[in-house]
Length: 381
Image (tube, rainbow, N blue to C red; front, top):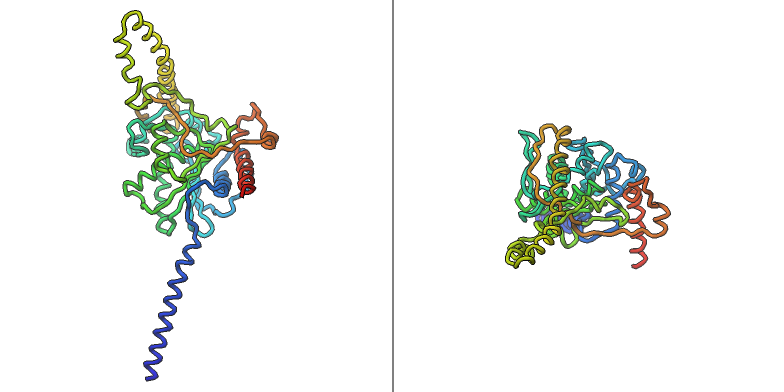
């Protein structure tokens, strides 16, 4: 009898312990951070500090360290002097992929100027034995910047396996961030990853949130539509200092060929031919004067920032085979933007100086403006 009673008590105690552990486990898990949609100024400031450590330029050397992330991996330079870092937050629940921006080396700036467009779905031949296949959008008119796509081609070789390794360790939340050129590549990496997920090449339960900082324009309007569809409802932001020239780049040229196939100009030449002389002649001259300058400018951009620039690229990437370029240079601002406007105090700290063209683009300028925005938000609460 006593033996049965002891067994019963032990069973009750064991069951109680099981219940206690079961109740405590979810509570412990809820302490791990998860990403939420929407712009968070504290997130941006932390990631700005973090990604500044990936820069070799003077305009970020003395930035403060991030408060909640620890550097886990720093890549060697690759491609056109591209590099990236992996950071993990203090409770090991969120990883941050930091993409390096432009450096002081020639090949890094060649990547920026290699701005002829290529299709947003296709491949790049890096060498006879190395072809990078990618999908960044479904629309057949979507196009992106060739130089930054080249950066993605090299960086993704390391980044995707590292994401998988983090996933095996239980990390399901990732930031993607970068300043300047790093922000531009951040757009392309985000699209690339989302399509890998949709194709079953990355787990669907990984959540990515992107903070591009001072990012220039990565592609045309159809790419922007595709990107914004993928990241809408608060999963991607580009933070822009309104006095910074970099987000205004690259140069854009829009022609009638950049419009959707159904548009008022599709049959313009046919309509002109139906007019009686001399109206037909007058309308033809007017039409040519309106359309030909933009088309000529686009061809020049494609020639000099594509064909000619690729010859310089091949001096650094000897086995690279230049792709077929799109007949478009219709670069547009992409994604949800958070605009930072400087006040009189900002102008005192960061005056417009034609001799210091990176003054408004620096990490310090962006940190100053972000802290101002945080103060404004806190005062409104």
